[in-house]
Length: 317
Image (tube, rainbow, N blue to C red; front, top):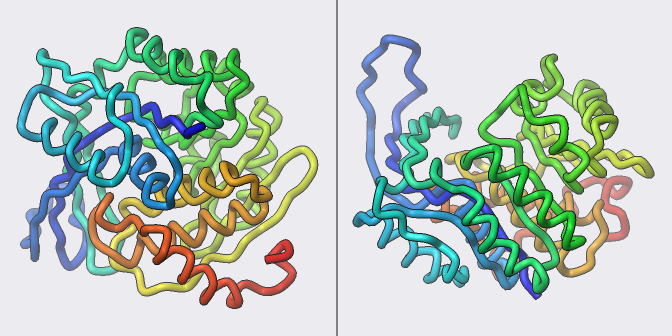
């Protein structure tokens, strides 16, 4: 059995600067590097590095970026037989600016990711009988996301949606197909139409998402922690304190940690703690996939840092 990721595969072009530029400003940067990314690929790598059998379904272009992207996925242990090389378009690219405080701005050029369609969903569907969960994001066409979620529901496979990039108009038919939705503050605010900036507003947002049909709503609040709600339980998990370098893949690391825990039969509460730990670790390093922890590093971090979480939040850890 494995987890399948259906989503974007990008090359990230990253510039670091003292701060993020404002509109119309030219800012002198500090460094530049190129690293494999894309929310789909990041989540696949996050899972594979935590020792979970992982497959990815998506597209790259017939260019040097595409070759490198597939090789890097394979090097991380991701199965790539269902990555289609599209000769009609370039590979996806993300242009990222990162400040000294670790905050980021991202512009994504979809490239081959924008061509993902029902043919890719058909390739995905053939893999579902051997899967336990499907991870989705919003860097591919929404029609393909909905079709993939429907296929997973028909196969009785758990669907975990990271609604990023932020959108305010997700199709109403998508919500009931989602087992777990994991927006951050900005994304949650876009989905529900009001600012989400702490535990109280996260709880209100989560309740709205449950009313729309999702089974579990997890709102990631960055350094403030994580709020989780289902019809049966509601709880908050504080963030792990770390020295933040770059938050660009922290959300993807969270989804990887959460899905890895659920794959292993661990409770939802403990799964959220796993997600928070993976996200915190990713924030301590630069880049997207380069920041994602391996299992040895993750286990050591969790063992050392979990004592920082008050006992009332630990759920028996």
